[in-house]
Amino acid sequence: MPYSNAKPFKVIILGFDGVLGSVLSGALDLFSFTGVSWQRFLGQAVEPRFDVQIASLHGLDIRCSNRLIIQAHCAIEDVTHCDLLLIPTIGDSIDKVLMQNLSLLPHLKRLANTQADIASNCSGAFFLAKAGILDGLTATTHWGYASKFKTDYPLVDLQENQLVTQSGNIFCAAGGSAFYELALLLIERYCGREISTQVAKTQIIDSKRGSQNSYTNVTLYKPHSDHLVKRVQEFIEDNFDQLIQVRDLAAMVNITPRTLNRRFQSCMAMRPIEYIQAVRIEQAKRLLESGDVTIKSLADQVGYSDISSFTRLFKRATELTPKEYQNKFSRMSI
Image (cartoon, rainbow, N blue to C red; front, side, top):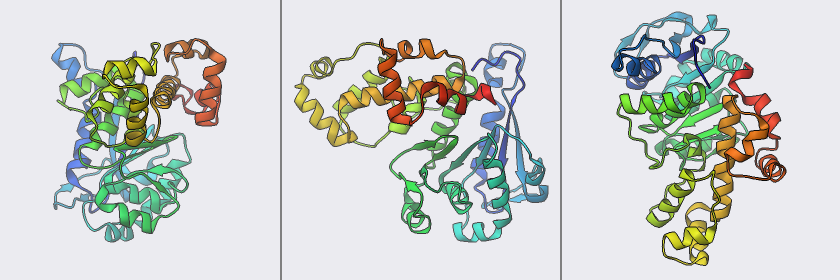
């Protein structure tokens, strides 16, 4: 989405006693300095992309799990609108922190009923699940909490092997460095790939995915150790807008198409052709969310010459036509 003198997007970071201080302050720094560091390096006028505030219950000071005291900028009760609400990691006992902060849940539900994006990191997903926001949706959390999460919240489709999940406007990161994957994805969602890449460079963030042609492909991420399959994945992600034949992919890595299909199925639970389609659909979703693409040009940008065929595939994957998806999720429509 082009920025061009637009009003900064409003980001609210939820502060609560027992929060992991490094994630709370790290999120504040990362979004506050989006665009700013790059502009300073180039001697340009500083134009922040995000207006970032920490909000706590009643605006009270926040006692982090490391006993650091952080002053909130505002009270969560006073937040009536934001573009993005971030829920940081719980640093203390999860059950203890949730019980001590039950008063926050109505405000999470209230903001979830607006058009705001909601994003949690690591054990922060427990807040969203406790509020019922994740019921029926895909989510992730730190692998160490997966068993507890599944027991406590069986209505949530937990995908603990994924770094980042997205269900509409609800995002979750698995924890640790996955927070940076999530942050870069969100920065790209609001400011475009160029700004996201600038942030990765200025903050020296080395993403886990290898190829970073489209951060939205984190929704397809499944950990595996087959380097041949990873090479094919990276080629697909770098060339999704071109004609790609499975036989050519197999020849590229010196195996037969049948063997490539078998190994891909074993690692990704889908065939290469299905992965190509999935990557293209994810890319199309990103373009539609940015709001700066016409439906007419969309199919060509993601590698389809037949727009009707693309539309059928898109609706099968999302249950929405491209136009319906754009109307629902485009940041420009907010």
